[in-house]
Amino acid sequence: MGELATNGDISMGENDWGMISKSPPMYESGVDNAVIEVTDTENKVHKITFKKGGVLNVGREGNTLYLAWDDSDTV
Image (tube, rainbow, N blue to C red; front, side, top):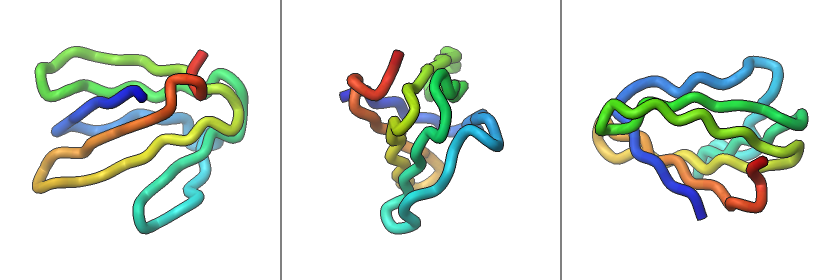
């Protein structure tokens, strides 16, 4: 299980992802090689590439976003 925390924005291809749940927020990759770019709480940039059907879970606590995914969903 991969996890990241960020206080910044998440960059994801507008047409690459679709919301599959609002509560809790979950996004599914609609294409192979869908990339998200995240700057973590230590200001390190991460680029994570997902397979088609990969799921990204998003949670929030205060100003911090928490991202989680199954490693088998990544390339």
